[in-house]
Length: 290
Image (tube, rainbow, N blue to C red; front, top):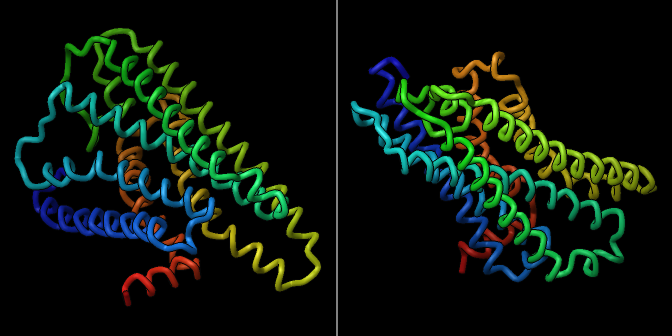
């Protein structure tokens, strides 16, 4: 905030958000590791979503909290590059792990007899490994493009962390190539992931509508409700943020959207997946009473 009086209140607000994010996601990671009833593909992917959410929030929040307390907000060139790279690894990984989770629900509901064959332990490890490898590759390519241009004019980043758009806005050289790389990467990743999610849920809805009993339909819908909520909030924010031409970008609006998907969504996901999930709630009760 540009208002000094808001710095301390905002520090405590985001400290609470980050504290809840760490607590919630570590709880999901712990429960899905130790509880025998949560050793299924769905909870394996949920565990990795929690790891990604925790990582994404940790890349951003600590530096942000420090900046609320100090008068001079500085970051080194290499610290900025590291933060951008870490942010890109986790944000791209989240885009694809949500698509993987949608595919998992599709197989579970549309082909239940083949579920443990199609989504085998080996397939789960392969899907998660490919997600991390691709997100790391994307982060390296995009970060190299962003930091390949010249930065010789302003050194004031109009953001609360190092992101592609506010960094490229500082360059005094031609940024058309890195901007194109960022746009193609963001749009391709989002469109591929959204296509997987929409196709999966379209087939899920068709399959559920064929179920004759209302109880069966309700149970099938309930297994997808948490994921649909998480996907809608996350993709909606990202589409708003990244698929705009640069001349339509309002950095102040982008900052609000960035707060949402780097700090608020990682806090909300454990709540979304645990409050609506009987297995997770039962595992938590069992863990606390032992």
